[in-house]
Image (tube, rainbow, N blue to C red):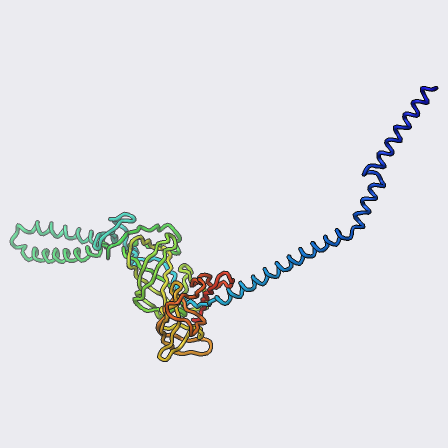
Amino acid sequence: MSFLKKFKNKRFRNNSFKSNNFRNSSFGSSGFKSKNKGFKNNPFKNKRFKIYAGIAVIILLILGVLAYVDSKNTELQANENFIETYTIPENEKIFINGMVVPKQTKDFNISGDYELSDVNVTNGQKVNQGDLLFTAKNPTIIAEIDSLKSQLSQYKKQKISLSDIAENKDAIASINAQITALNSQIASLDKKAYDRVTAPFDGTVYLNDQTGNPDQPVSFMTIQGLEFYMKGQASEQDLPKMKIDQMVNILVFSTDQKLTGRISFISDKPSTPNTEMGAQQNTLSYYDINIAFDNQEGLVNGFHLQASLEVANSSFKIPASCVLKDNKHSYVFKDLDGILKKQIVDVASQNDDFAVVRGGLEQGDIIIKHPTKEMKEGDPVQGDGVTAGSNNGDTTPNKKVEEVTMDVN
């Protein structure tokens, strides 16, 4: 019994020790509440935190306002440096569609009274003028010649049989007359019996396939000259702008070959629009145009082409704001690689919007659209490093020159 009592007393003392230690520690409920209560009831620390947060917000607002103002100032400065230019448009171009055709061509057919006798060339053979191509014969005439030759042979035999008797001189003379007449008749018919066809010019011979559609007969043989030209068509809208001997640039579609040539013929008779040459509109009249090539190299009969010609302008229409005047002349400022150049111009007419200039400008020239009296020749287009033509119409402030191209034709 005394042992059990001692054990209980010892256990009680240990529990009491643990309980007192926990209460006295910082994790005890009374200690934790005491510290937490102290934090909440510290007005000095709470106020200082709010002040710091407010100062940070104010600083951020000030920085945002300063950034916005700086951006606006940059944009305004860029707009002040912005110079608008006008580019003289390129000359009008006219396009003519067509194809390569030989300058000379001839088809050969055998008439109904004749039949083919001999062919003296092969398909695709090059021939010279005067070379024999083929021979055709007329069977009826040949039969008639054979008959006359038979008669001639009989007369010759009679003449031989009568030649030994002197009294037969008159008969022999009559036979000679018959022989002479027959020979003359045979010679005349012999020219018609055979048709020997020769090349009318230098060229290439083609033997055509005649086994196709009988309703669309094909010639027996064709010879094409070695020199080619472009056969095209132009609409009534473009015809007045063309003239004989006008230079054109030519593109061969299939090979991208580039050629030059000159207009050699302009028809004044309307023709049917040729869809093979690219004519598509049927509301306009079309006229045949022939173009002579400057170089025949690489040309192939039937290749499709497009010719282009430039219609030179004797005057240009520009914005009226481009033109300045001094005591003697009207002038504009050209942009030459970022440098101002004073260019005297001949103004034919002018209104509030446009001025028609007859001299002093060329296609592709860049002029200042709104020049000022302060501008001088030799000055940079803009002192802040603006480069002429640097943005080609983009009004973004980062690009400080606007280049505007207007179609005023």
